[in-house]
Length: 345
Image 1 (cartoon, rainbow, N blue to C red):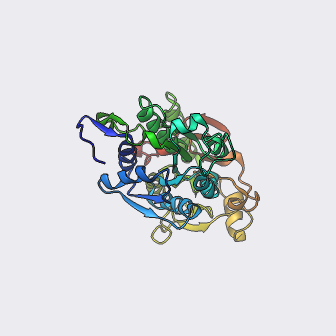
Image 2 (cartoon, one colour; image 1 turned 90 degrees about the vertical axis):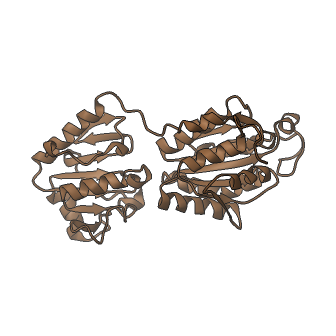
């Protein structure tokens, strides 16, 4: 199924080359008659391999784990209907905890869809072949149908960008009759823009405000949560923790982001009132500044919402905003966190 035209590449190959550019080395899923020809292109991409699973739900959970460990999206391939529905619980779990995941669904051909032909996996006579796509609406950040060869490459790129910027699952639906259609190979030379767009001067204002809070503090602490890693800021936050040398804590879901063994300033996991008395007393009452990175304020991550950190001493660096003692800076991204320069401290 190789391409004889040096200036073009099959759409299926384009899709996997784009995914490989993200650092993904393994594609996970279950073969089906609507994705088999698409799967053939995996072998044509250098450094990429196929991992089959016994069922789609297990594949979805494997993709969730892959993303958490590797930092690149987990990529799942299923077939229309029965396959994508089997996987949806795992994808919903990834959505809940903001894990990057790309769900690729092989579907019936576009002509078959238009004729509403009764095909296995469809619902009754005169079926809507795209009805299953509507079911995943609430567990995805973006989706596309690759049913227009002129826009298919840009649609792939748009959805991949949404996966990264929002750190959420996305869906790509690939009709069987578009797998081998050709697109411009040169498009692959320009990487997908994965950087969020910050508002002018907001980051600098936020940084000034946070550094002023640090300079004024006499008993500060750091609190590291799981969205730090989801949004690619692990190294930056580790650098900040190492530089500042403040007492450092993680949430239960943020464990392992900070090196717990070798960082002498790490003191354990804070989870509201569900942690040692000294710990919540220290964080909630004794500190005069708490800087938290990547908060995910679920019940299981806040001691059943029992944590009580006063907003007057809290700097919260979320994935797409910074709140410094009640002052909010929108479109300032956690991925932009840098080791603080000496002149700020």
